[in-house]
Length: 173
Image 1: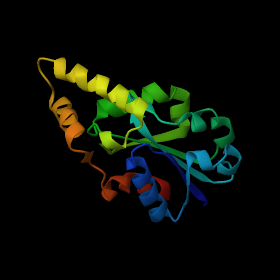
Image 2: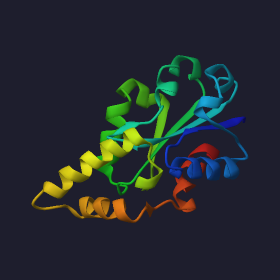
Image 3: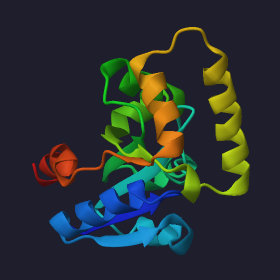
């Protein structure tokens, strides 16, 4: 089976996971802007990874808008974000990004990534600064919110190679 890993990464966490997955599966790997849907359609297994931003998966439209061209293939989408891996987060991300019909064809995984304010582009820095201000105005913060505020000062990286095991097992089964 020919496998391709396609990714879109802003801060490097998704890229790291994509590289690990490609190594484990001896798959081809491309940054999303460097491959066309025509090229992707030549593979039996398609793995797409994107960063998670306000429950939206960065660049996943490449897969969703071309799902009809990818039917009959094994399709995996993974997202990476700073939030801990929780069922309610995974469910919210799936339902926000994929219709119930699309979920029949796409297997979704969440891989905890991290947060590095220094690696953000100016527009993303503005958005994250607004979030920081919003959090600082709250009277009570959840542990996740406290961790997020701390990550503005000291980057947080929760990536671990073992996190890809479920994806590898699914692809090789």
